[in-house]
Length: 124
Image 1: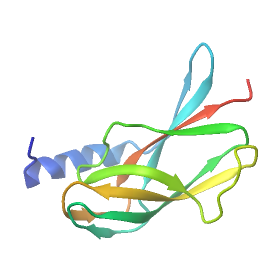
Image 2: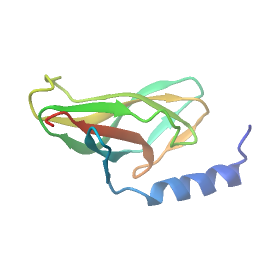
Image 3: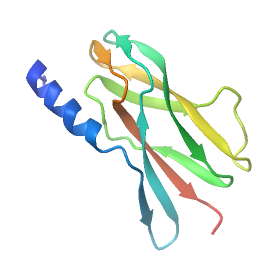
């Protein structure tokens, strides 16, 4: 499916509106869905993979991170997240960048939702 410029604009406006974390509680575990929000504007070309600074996301000790596989940005997908100095899961962490793989050319704007982190509490 090819998105026209108008369709991409609508999708970006709709996606950008939901930026708050959402808690969830399953029978076996609790967690939170947290949007990954661009902190800078970046030009991307089709097929490019770039590192984008994102709004910091605090990850408490003993919490596991998963990336939602559902595409949230019309230009591409977040394939990994990290911070300057990787830490073990037993320590508190802070996500500060996302590795973004572009499927079409365009501009990732500051404030765009790039993807969603799923933070799962493993403490019981």
